[in-house]
Length: 96
View 1 (cartoon, rainbow, N blue to C red):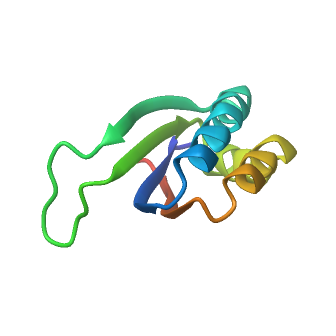
View 2 (view 1 turned 180 degrees about the vertical axis):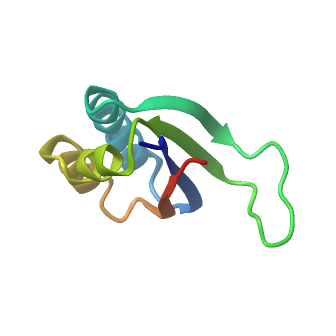
View 3 (view 1 turned 120 degrees about the vertical axis):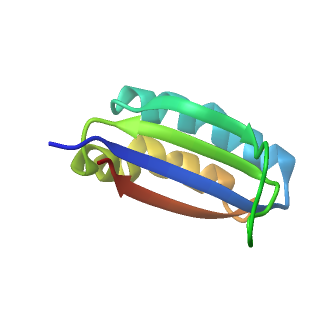
């Protein structure tokens, strides 16, 4: 079974307070679901159409575990706290 990587690329942050409320809930929810944060912060460099915005990379033991983390009640509560506070692109990618 291949590892999976959850990649969140922030396109815009509209409400820093909502983002902080999300982060307070999301971090514990994702680590409790087996996620390991590998990178978190503003992009060090961008190329082509990349945006110099916040990026988060989380490792999971499998795609199924990453999807289950996303769908968990704890993470859904974090998403509710975020609401319209940010615009993001989230992908789960299978490792090689």
